[in-house]
Image (cartoon, rainbow, N blue to C red; front, side):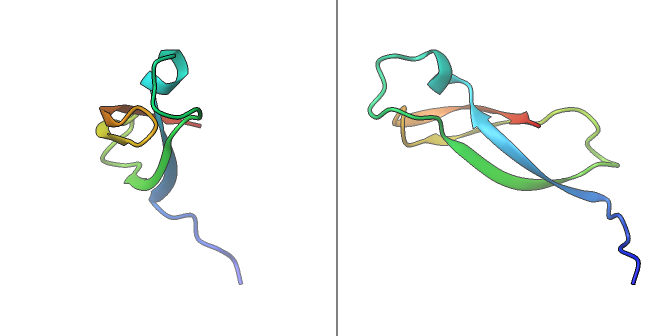
Length: 64
């Protein structure tokens, strides 16, 4: 059976503060996975989500 390439993509969102912030609660980089519709959202997504390493809400950007 041939698989049909869907419209929705699974993407990864990474915290932007974890890379540069040295005064965070614990070491590491926080990542979330989600999906997006490639027809409606052609650009990269930026969402404000909670980062447990920074212990605050920060901007998470889409990475490939």
